[in-house]
Image (cartoon, rainbow, N blue to C red; front, side, top):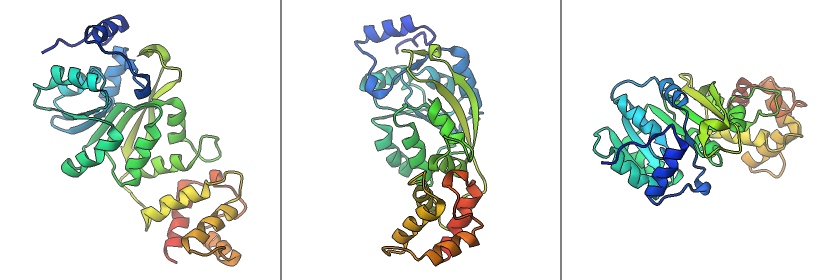
Length: 291
C-alpha cells in the first residue's frame, strides 16, 4: 500500500506524479486543492454522520477522499483518469467503506444510481466545463441529494444562486433553486489549487427542499423554463406563445388563450422572463397543466 502523498505541496504532488509516470490532463480539468484548511472546511460542510452514503466526483489523488473516509462515511468515488484510478485503488482499496467507479461520471452515475439508489450527499470539485450539466441533469431526472457540496467555476455558482433582474439569472438558476436552497461556502483563490486555474472558483452548498416539486407536472415546468428563457430579449408573451404552440401542436397559439393563461397566473404579458420569480413559473406551469 502506497503512503499518502503530501496533498499540501505542489512540489510533492508533482514528484509523486512523476514517480508514477503520470501527468495532469488538461481535458479533464484537473486541479488539486492544496490548501488544507479549505479541504477540511469543505468536508465539514457535508456534516457527515457515520455510515452515511456519499458520492465523490473527481477524487483525483484522494486528498478529500481520505478526509471523508476518516469520517466513517460509505464513499463511492467516480474517477475518469485511469492513472488516478490505479493510485486510488492502491491507497484506499483496503478500506471497507470505499468503492471506486472508473470512467466518465456523466456516463456511469445512472447505472450506479439504479443499483444503489440516491446517496445522502454528493461532493466534488466539479470539472468546470461540465459542472452545470452534472447538476442540471440530476435535477431534471428527479435525483436529489440531502445535500451537495461542490466547487465550481464562480460564474456557474453565480448562476446557481442568482435572483430575478440580475444578469446571471437564467433557467439554470430556477432549476437549482426549485430543487435546493443554494448558499455560498467560500470563494477559492487560484493559489489554493495546483496547477493554478485560469478561472475563479466558489464552493457552494445545496440543501434539498422539502416542498418539491411544488407543481403538477415537473416535466412541463422544466420545459416552460427553457421556453420562456429561449430568447431573453423577447417578452414573456412572445416566448410563451411560441412555447405553447409547440405544446398544443399548433402552428400558432391563439393570442386570446395566451393572454388568458398569463392573466390567470398573475403574470404581466409585457415583462421578460428574467423579472419573474420561481413562484411565478410554478403558477404558470400549473395553469397550463390544467388545460
